[in-house]
Image 1 (cartoon, helix red, strand yellow):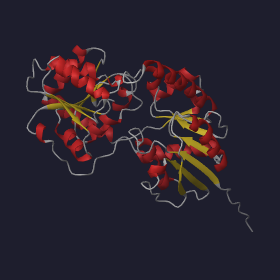
Image 2 (cartoon, helix red, strand yellow; image 1 turned 30 degrees about the vertical axis):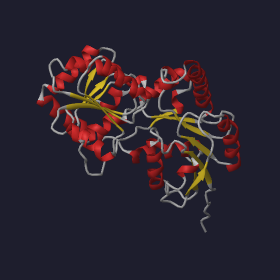
Image 3 (cartoon, one colour; image 1 turned 180 degrees about the horizontal axis):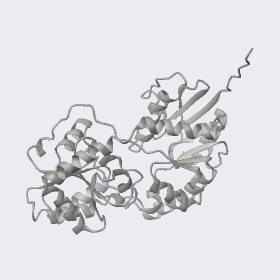
Length: 375
C-alpha cells in the first residue's frame, strides 16, 4: 500500500486595503486571477479590506475570505491595531500589496513595492513641513519593509534595480511580475465638446512627477503649427488641477480642456479618437495608462524616463521629459505623419498584448510557494 501524505493547510493573508483607490488596480487584478490559477486546496486566503469595501468584493472561490481591516495607511493604528490583527490571524504568509505595513510584524511577508516616486517627489498641495516629515518616515518604512520581507515584488526591472540600490536588498530576493492593461468593455461614449476636433490627451492625477507643466508649455509651442489642436487633461479635479487651470488662464493658452472625472465609456472614446496619447511622466513604476491607450488604438508619445522604454518597447515615440522643445517636436512628428501614427498604433496593440494579469498571478503564486517552502 502506497502511503500518501496530505499537505498541511497554509493561510495566506493579502492586504487589499487599497482595492478601491486609484492605485488599487494591481491588487484587484491579482486577487481576481489568483482565484483562477491557485488550485492548491491546502491554500486558504484571507483578504483584508476596508470595512466599506467588504460588500463590494465578492470572492469567486470559497478558499478566499474577505475580512474587514479598519486601520488606515500611514496611521498609528496601522502600526499597533493592524499589527495585532495580523498576529491574531496567525498567517503562514502575509502579502502586502503596497509598502505601507506594520513594521514590527515579524512573520513571513512578501511586499510589492511599485516604485520610489514618493521618496523623490514633493506634493506642493500638501503642507511642506508635514509632507517632508511623512516623506522621511516613508523612506524609513520602505527600507525596513524591504529588509524584513522574505521576498519583494516589483513591476519592472527598472524598479527592481532602483529598489536594490536604495534599500541594499539582494536583487535575488526581488521578483519582477509585469502588470497588464485591460480593454474597456463598455461601449464608447463621446464627449460632445471634443467631437470633430483634433486633440492629444493625458489621463490621470496631476501630481508633480506627472510633469503636466512641461506638457502644457510644449502644447503652447505646438499651437504655433497646429492652431486648431486641443490638449485634453482628463481626471478628477482637485487643487493640483486647479493650479494648472489658473496657469492656462494666466498665460492665455487656448484649447486646453480639463474634463474632470470621465467614465469608462468616455475614456474609451477619448483613447479611440485622440491624435496621440502623451505621457510626460518623470517617474513611473509601470505606466498603465499609456499601455491601456495602446490597447485601444491610440498612438503613444512618451517620456523616456525610468521604466517606460522597458514597458513600451518600440511601440512609442520617446522624448526627453525635461525638454519642452523635444516634447513638442516628438508630438508634432507623430501628428504630421500618418505613416508613423499607423505604425505606432499597430506596434502599440502588439505591445499591450504581451502582458497578462493571469501570468502576473501565476508568477506571484510561485513566489508564495517559494517563501512557504513548497518549491
